[in-house]
Amino acid sequence: MNSDEGNIKAIVNTLLFNAGNYNINALDSTMSDKAMLGKSRLKDGTWSNSEIAINDYFESVKMRKRSPYFEIPNNYDILITKGRSAIARADCI
Image 1 (cartoon, one colour):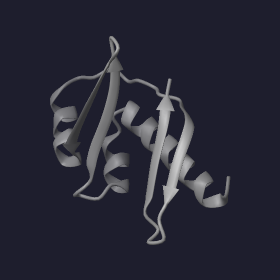
Image 2 (tube, helix red, strand yellow; image 1 turned 90 degrees about the vertical axis):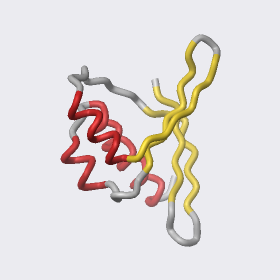
Image 3 (cartoon, rainbow, N blue to C red; image 1 turned 135 degrees about the horizontal axis):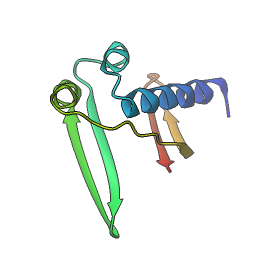
Image 4 (cartoon, rainbow, N blue to C red; image 1 turned 45 degrees about the vertical axis):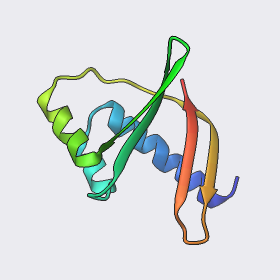
């Protein structure tokens, strides 16, 4: 693992921690206003995918009381493009 991959893993862990605690202020300071939040979920043997604009997600969090959750990422796949964009995928338990 190179230092860029280590930095990306640290950022992903921080984002998941803040998302799990619904810390909107911390998330907002690290996200673009045009960010999209995507998730894939396996339930009863069927995968479902969804995405939502980050600002819509923030509004939905403010409207409901949610219980914190914690996801531990592992088995990372990281792609860093020449333009310095990064895509990270990790299985979470």
